[in-house]
Length: 81
Image (cartoon, rainbow, N blue to C red; front, side, top):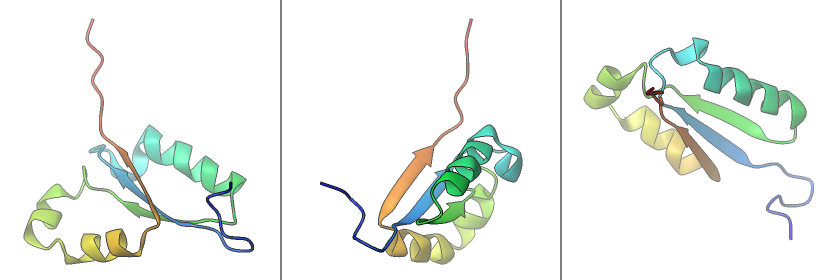
């Protein structure tokens, strides 16, 4: 069973936890997915880069979350050796 309604794509919200925001590898990967799947609508919330703004006013983020049918979250990961 497909999660996509016939003829319609999903509204996907990508919550990027990287402080690099638009320069993050996560975003570059999702932009590639966006090219591969034009039937879906992708929105982005750069939470890592905009954390101070979100602390002051979460309303724009909440609006995106309410509109989303799928939410993908990626936080910054640290490699330890």
